[in-house]
Length: 197
Image (tube, rainbow, N blue to C red):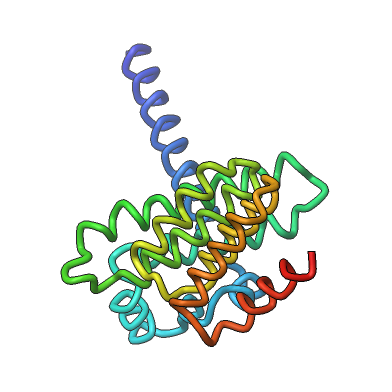
């Protein structure tokens, strides 16, 4: 009889811990109204129709795309607390990696190229903040492969080259970016700034 009670108590404790884990997991994915305001407009969904629209644009991993931005925003708010900032940035990397891994398989005829490019750019920014420049460069190059017309990829890549003291490489990247996105004011400003050095 005692053995049955111990087993029953063990099962209750186990189930209780699973419920608590699920609650903590769900809490980690919760987005407060304040956080929602900081997300890209595509992530600010309020109805089931908007949720379906977002999923049709962002692909099957739409939730993870938005969660990645939430984690980056949390990292921005935790500046000064290096451990918390790093944890949030690492969480963002995981979310963006999930998007890249799960969206590629559904990218028939380039349907999600923009999402993959933007996710690669955001992942590159996170790697850069974590001091992982080689990985950041790889993400910016990947973004350019998905969509060569996004100036953010060239801007991020040129910033890394400048950090590495490779001014001519930075200039080449910016000039290539301007050929792809000739109206980009941010790339033009960066080229002007380099010309003044």
